[in-house]
Image 1 (tube, rainbow, N blue to C red):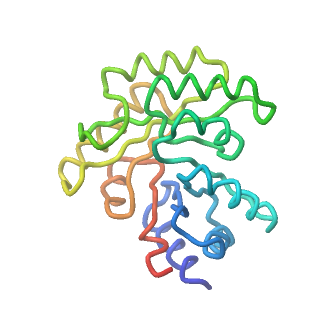
Image 2 (tube, rainbow, N blue to C red):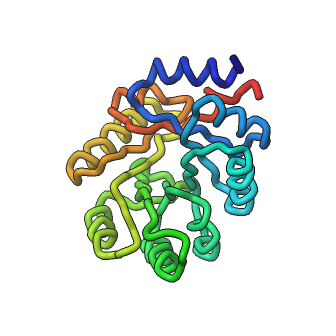
Length: 213
């Protein structure tokens, strides 16, 4: 059994029923394939230019996984991104939302694009995302755009502040409940226990899975 498989099985047992999203953007092709062969079904990439190669690599190996885009996406890369990513987790502006809808509308590749709206609940200037006051309007816009499917929210915790991170994750989970959104993508390797306590449905893992690779 590989080290990745052992760590993955341990994390599944610790965090169940939360879904685990493996951050493969820093990993080699070999490690990425090993992860998917270890029954990891959700992977995270953030470089649009690297994603087609990894997508083809996975296909050629006869494997399957769901590929998520996380990270700030420039509008000029949307056309390429919709062809690769099953879900875009970091939609952080109205302009980007409308651009995705438009590109899917003129594409033969898919009927709609699954997205998550990114919230910035920590008010940190270096982070992207909507504030709470914009959320209802953006969800209404999503409902009006025919090529968008938004059932999820995502956010990040506060840097180096455990208590604030706990408050942020609890707030994000509450907003999902208020708006009847199915997936709350909160938590990473370093704060995964806090996220699970806040009823995260998906955590993003890098060091917890790959630190020795």
